[in-house]
Image (cartoon, rainbow, N blue to C red; front, side):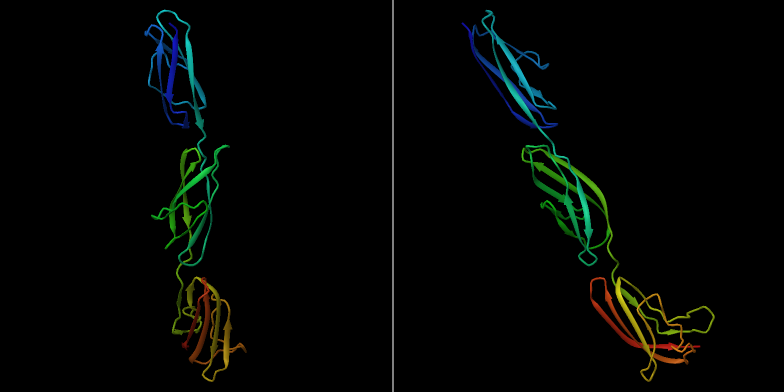
Length: 260
């Protein structure tokens, strides 16, 4: 009698690098069936493990010992594209919690689309947003990872090393004396600070008359009056008005000793 059927089983869709199992069964004929495959699989019922790099159809011919007319069957393994992972660091804010912004630039061949994202920010934080924001508590170099999954379930992962530069914490130091006597040591009344956006200094004598003003932290008082004459030795009052990089206002009032 003729070989009446052949049944193939196996996965029909894999991602690049994935594997599928193929097997076959048949009935009919004299029961002494031979299964012959193409694409280098050889003979037998399987299961055969295949890992095609492109969509491939596997065909098997089934014959019996009586040389009855053969039947054939085939199964097509569709190879879905793997996404290409790409990402971009956009910016980081100047103020705590130092919010960094990232953008997903990943892609996958149509008709697949990317449907899932998993970001790792290198400090234990993560996000499933496509274009996330993340707050860092301090600056440093972090390994940013991104895993994307396509609508076909294909997964790809990549990472970049990103240096997150943040402004140093605000600080401001005011000396309490200076000696503008020409020895090139401590010649200026000049504070030291960092993370400063705006700055103003006004100095007054004991009668409240202004003797010096500056809007530049690098421009300190050399102990001279607006007339160009040396100011007398003594105590002078100062007023600082400062805004740091985060917009917070800082005011300082005090006195400085001019010593000659």
